[in-house]
Image (cartoon, rainbow, N blue to C red; front, side):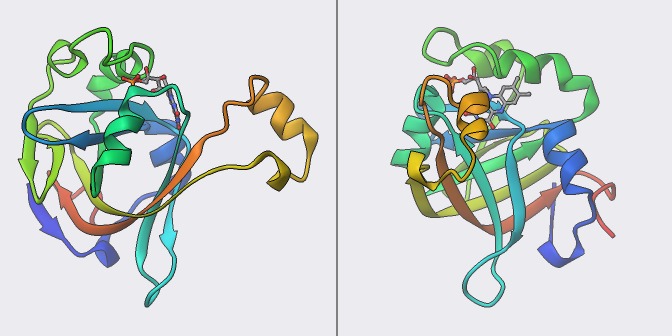
Length: 173
Ligand SMILES: Cc1cc2nc3c(=O)[nH]c(=O)nc-3n(C[C@H](O)[C@H](O)[C@H](O)COP(=O)(O)O)c2cc1C
């Protein structure tokens, strides 16, 4: 994969995150986990318009333990041919199965983070903020009723994008 400047990325965030989905991965050489996400944001926050990615993890996710423990997490965008594996990684827990091996993914440990050799776009993110969403912050009860009937509020993580890796030119403007 080759590294590019985040300013040279090209994509529609709604299609990329909500449509193609991403894998959130954290851990080290000996132990790591990954899961599918389709909620998140990519944009500028703090510093000098720092490039950041925001993800939301529910308390039950095994991956959350790794994201909480590690300094870095990665976001991987996979080819369409991995859709079935993405659905699997987003429905089974790494507590119960060796999801990464079962999905045929090859972990790469680099820059204090884990990503997958098969990814077509990788964002290496340094965790700079983590906080559970609080019930009293919601301005409309319907959001809670729709998304949190069990009050299992997501933890929001802001990661500063430190490196962008691409497989080919698809995401380069
Ligand atoms: C398309 C898709 C999107 C998902 N998006 C999220 C998300 O943004 N946040 C979240 O906490 N869970 C999300 N999930 C659910 C987790 O991926 C799922 O619970 C997963 O099995 C957790 O795995 P783990 O326990 O190994 O971490 C999504 C699942 C799918 C299929």
